[in-house]
Amino acid sequence: MEQASSNTAPKVWLVCNPASGSNDEATVEALADAIADAGLDLARIVRFPDDSAPTPADLDAAGVDILAVFGGDGTTHSIVAAASGWRGAVLVLPGGTMNLLAKRMHGEAPAPDIVARLTGKKLRTQRPNVIRSRHGIGLTGALAGPGTVWNEVREAMRSANVLDFVATAREAIAHSATGPRVVCAEVDCGREDGYAAITVVPREDGLKANGYYAESLADYAGQGIALLNRDFRNGPHDELGRHERLRLVSPTGEPMGLLIDGEPFDGAAEEIFELGPCEVDLVTTKELDG
Image 1 (tube, rainbow, N blue to C red):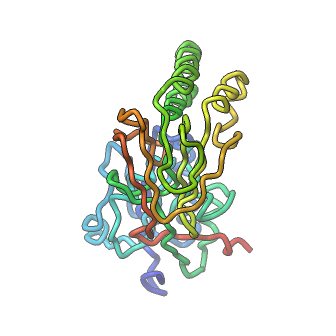
Image 2: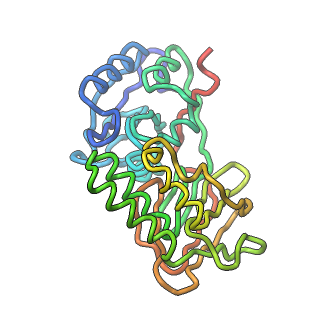
């Protein structure tokens, strides 16, 4: 995709989420300055979720060329899903805790540096593979099983409430060990008795699945304060292969815990995930920093 015109600055809407990790007013103002310095026309700042996620009709009516998203993976999920089918480009900027999609599109770089890479350059875009399911898209990945309770531990850490953190950590340990496990129902897909958590991550060559058993999750609980800086998904696991289509099943028939892009969804006893391209162009700058 090319910018709208060589004589007219591309029009930008910037979405930010005050609840995300880096979205204080000073940081948003500095990012707005970086957008102007890059020769782009910042026409509006959208404060999500108080302001609704822009739709293709909203963006086209305003003549927007670039929709920039400054938030975490959950915010980005909502904005990209709402913009699906739009003819413009979405610029994902790291403004949350993990920023997995921003890293996929730009590598490790702060938001102002990513914007600066666009100065005087033609936009490079791509439509990376994402997860498709009955819940919609998954841009960075899905997590299924009782291990999803660890998301509550992370939220308690964010709130800096020590009592909540201790309580939710204890609950996470117990639930990870005793909650209904999840089985990967494909051929040669790991342990027959299932896992406390299965992650599904979209890659260009398929959905990458990993299985984590209860013992590995409990090991993290024993590390106490290390939970503040570590993600259990980096811990011991079984590689469950890469798939075009993946079926996860709760053998007990109970609904499974489910997170998509870090946000909770109501899982059923069976969930199917498929690989497919994103339905809107995403800006990539990995080769534009030199």
